[in-house]
Image (cartoon, rainbow, N blue to C red; front, side):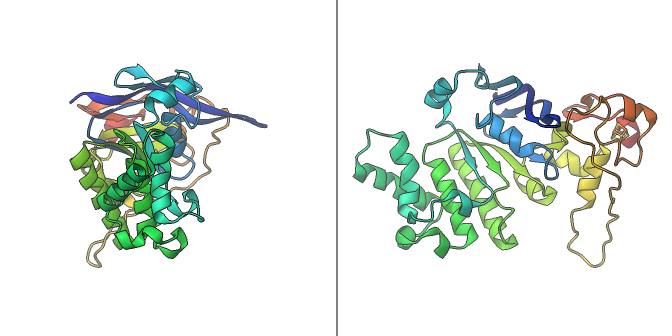
Length: 319
Ligand code: SF4
């Protein structure tokens, strides 16, 4: 299958009183049509900014985002909205914050359909909204409920119905299950997977939780302070973790057995400032294997095995 999204050397910097904050710094990757890339990393690593830049909620500082070969990052925003807004949608972490509390469920699902399809009659908008509610498993009796009357899982189903109502091809899922109970997380992940199979959707799934991303991703990209430090097929990262930061993330996954013990890698040291960072490995201050070279030279993302890329000077040692 061909790539739907190709991101090339994407940068997003923000101006702050102390200097330029490098939120996303020279990130390159692609996503095949119908597949899911999981983007993982701790808070502040730039994964949400990356998602928002792909959606054109932020304009990139430089770099390209090719959608079916066309650069959507640098086209005028008006043209982007006309041609691509319905193709690319986002599902947010906190469905409650993204839903108008004064609207009932049917109105909430109708809203994007009405706004983006001005030619549809009121009856057609309602029919389409009901179709979307059924698709995501929201019972008809909930049409007149308000967001505060629903649990987190149902609220997230509204968010998914709203995103799907424009028949997108690509969805950025920004921590869509992290605010939900574990049992509800599984329901929403299954729903997203079923919808992907049915509709051939392509996902970028942003999360800080490695165990969540394991179930849904075809590829995994690990981000640290605005940069991609490891990228490979999903199964590979759990069998053969190379980058020391990815090792630390994986060691934090709880093991559901009292008989097995996992050795947790506790990271010590200060976080490097993302404001005008020096050319060095940004993980050096917390990496147990850091050397003078790490503190003076920035590692580049290198292919260590077919499809497995790592940004570490000593990646060979950790294979
Ligand atoms: Fe650690 Fe050095 Fe590799 Fe960075 S380049 S991850 S500091 S060993």
